[in-house]
Image 1 (cartoon, rainbow, N blue to C red):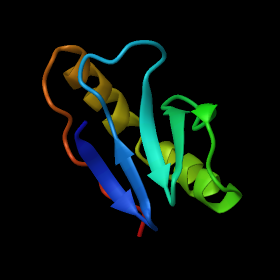
Image 2: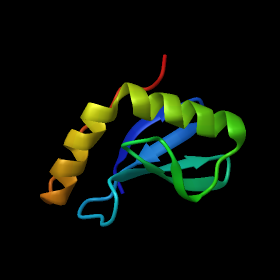
Image 3: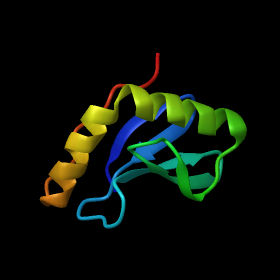
Image 4: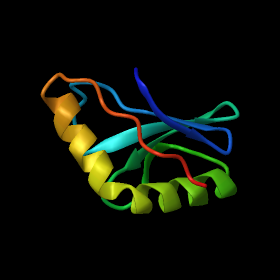
Amino acid sequence: MPTISVFSGIVVTMYSLDHGVPHVHARYSGAKAVVAIASGEILAGGLPPRAARLMREWVGAHRFELEANWERTSAGRPPLPVEPLP
């Protein structure tokens, strides 16, 4: 699963040919979550409050890039890297 960004200890990945609502996978200190691209909402799993807040902020700041990556992966192409939070 390609890593598309790493920030504040959070590793964000996106599967190729994944299904369901457009989303990313986030890992932080042993916690895992599936996060919706449209809203930053945690769809499955869980993250500590600070990591969840940072993910919502990051998804909001990069929504269009993430949607473009979802289209790429839906076509079987690898996603492009996305800038981390500063």
